Length: 79
Image (cartoon, rainbow, N blue to C red; front, side, top):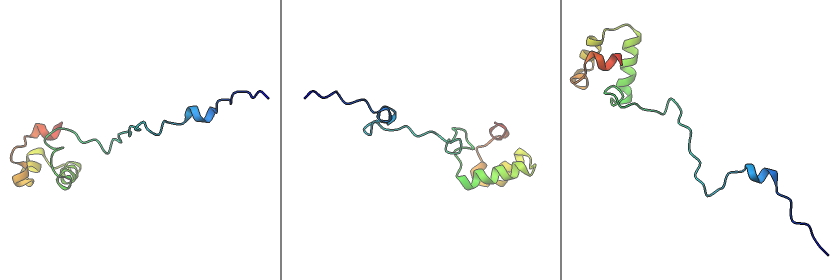
């Protein structure tokens, strides 16, 4: 008795190879920039964002950061 070759499973072609690593999509919230502000700890970045939303001037923000803001310039905040 002659048997036909198995038909390809259309679902199998759409399945990823389990041995191939799946690249994870980078969420915009996972990306961390390279600037001086981006290198600050998260609680300080959050503080900077809050101060900016409240309309505090860049030099005042730098002053409020104390030791963490000693190397910052207003341009670092504007970017």
